[in-house]
Amino acid sequence: MRNHFKINANFTLGKYMGLDTYAGKRLGEDKIDLLPDSLFLHNHLVSGVVSMDQNSFRGKIYNDYVKYVTGQSLYQGVIDEDTVAKMAEQLTKFALNEFNSEPGFESRNIYGVDQVIANELAVWFQTVAKNNGVVVGWW
Image 1 (cartoon, rainbow, N blue to C red):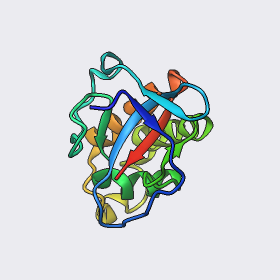
Image 2: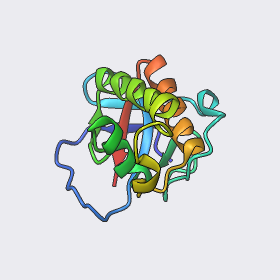
Image 3: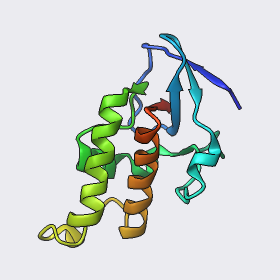
């Protein structure tokens, strides 16, 4: 497992490619360190192909739901701190207030995300945001 990610702007987007999603912390302009697993003991999200740690999850599985709620795709090299904070707020609000109350959402929920997973994603993003972290996509 890598301890640091080197930011690379030349990612290739592959709609059907796997995606591991990591919680990180910037160490200057070109390095990101992983946030400690100990912050994510609640994480029961599906692990990534390479990522088996608590500070990551299999982003491909949850990307469509996250994009529906936040407007942000997880298929990004790095999602900055401000955007992560907004995403955490949106995911939390949706999980708490709108998941079951949005008219017709249950009947059109094609994302494979239930209330438990919606809460898990919200908590994961809240943890990253509380630690002024970034989200890193690796595919």
